[in-house]
Structure formats: structure tokens, C-alpha cells
Image (tube, rainbow, N blue to C red; front, side, top):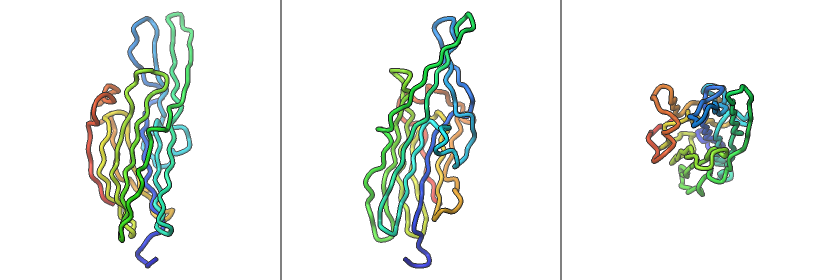
Length: 196
């Protein structure tokens, strides 16, 4: 490995709901709410249960390997009835839709895709939160990403080289764009390209 090459490059992706609770429409007198993640943008929320979807891809140039990690947060529904009594239900979405493709290794870089699609397990017909990244990582630590994602919830993507600081790659805040949970339906509305 030359002095200009790095050993490890990590791509960290997460989706989250910044509020503590998120109301949803109800047909009756009850109030329906889903627990949010009660946090802001940060690369350090992994393994805390404070994300809807988490994904990491770790490129190791020393042995030309790609390792990936996926998780989902616990979904909690709170139903408040007209008499003031409350019910709580919880569940965890499957990670089956959170994948990395097999890497394609070149002399100077590697390319692969990161894809996430996960639905609220408490709602049988819930639209999934989706993102798809086409990633190229160079041996000097440079990263290029072409991505697509839904308008809701918040999305954050970071890079880290050789255990250094996480650097923001891209962030989307639905509160700034005016998107709502209905943005989960249909195709992914947003597209971006970033290099670092």
C-alpha cells in the first residue's frame, strides 16, 4: 500500500424521524401516533435504536473485501382513546430489503450499490422508506455517490476513512422541503450526486 492509499473507507447511511411522536390520521375518536427517533443529524446514532433504517458498507482495500451492516429501529404505535386510556404496540421491520450488491473491483477503485427498503411493521399496507446509492470508492479514499431517496423522513449519508472523523456526504430534511409521510408512496422523489 502506497503512502497515498487508505486501508478502510466506510459509508454510513440512516433515515430518521426527528420528532418524539408523529401523529397520523384516525377514522374515529382515538388519537394515533408513531414514536419518532427524537434526534437531529449525526453520524453517531448507529446502534442506539434512534433510526428507522441504518446501513453501513465498509470497503477494505487491504484484502479487497466489502462488509455490510443493516438494522431497523423499533416502531412504536400509541393509541389514545377518547376516555384517556392508552395502548402501545411495537414491532421491528425486517432488514431483508437493506442490501449491498457484490463489489466490482478495478485497479484504482471499487463500485457497488447500497439499497434500503423497509416498511412500518405495525401497518400492513405501509409504503416503505427507500433509498438507492451507486457508490464508487477510490484507493486514495475519495468517494463518489449517485443517490435517490424518498421525500420522507430525514436521510443522512456520511463517509469515514481509516477510523477518522465522519464527514457529511449528503443530508435531506423533510421539514425544510415540506414533504410528509405520503412521500413514501410511489417513486423516489429526490436525486443527488456527491463527491468527497
